Length: 300
Ligand SMILES: Nc1ncnc2c1ncn2[C@@H]1O[C@H](COP(=O)(O)OP(=O)(O)O)[C@@H](O)[C@H]1O
Ligand SMILES: [Mg+2]
Image (tube, rainbow, N blue to C red):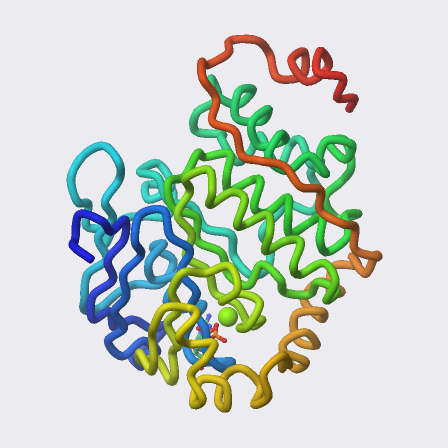
């Protein structure tokens, strides 16, 4: 791996919410076009790492450099999240990743608010990638099931046309049968060229779609390796994959995250995620969003 193959390089990052450092020198590399998993026990600093990359938690020491397709390396330290999004990285936080009082369509529009002229084109592309949202465009986001809502969170992030998508526990709060479908969506989006850095508690399932995994413990790099190697490593299996092969231990997390979703009254049955591809758009369109969607037979 050379630096030229990387889209993001995190080096010796220390960060925290107060004087105390939660991240005590974390390093990792995201290869362009890859899916990288960040795993580890609750409280090990996974969310803090993603937030530190995306400018939501101040970094004290270390560097985070982004290498977009066009242009040279960009140091992200000191940049605000919206500036980072404008450069080509977007993040789906673990909770509060949609505006519950807005419709699905309004949520998508918010995702490209800084580039209004491209909203119609991007909405069409994102809906082709995640067609289960098409019949839901007029629905208030608060009324969506957990799976639908998580899909909307991802869709909203895709509206900024990111080269790198950062996901914090996309399976959080989802019924077990929906988890694989959401992960398949992530995989489909990656196949279309979006690099992915994702935190997951469903470690085994996540390694199933990731190329490489990092394990954090108490704010430090603990273990790393290609997914196949990690899935086979006896220590990894014993400590992080629930002991026995084929069994995934994540009950405490499911319980925790379920609460987050129930807190705003979304305890509805999950709905299956349809499969589709994330098609790159050839030419920008100038037509209005609503008119465009109507012509496509999408009613609001
Ligand atoms: N907003 C916050 N303010 C202060 N401490 C926080 C905040 N969020 C998380 N922490 C602390 O940071 C540590 C790591 O949390 P987090 O990064 O959320 O872990 P993980 O995502 O791996 O479960 C925990 O000890 C947690 O209590
Ligand atoms: Mg977390």
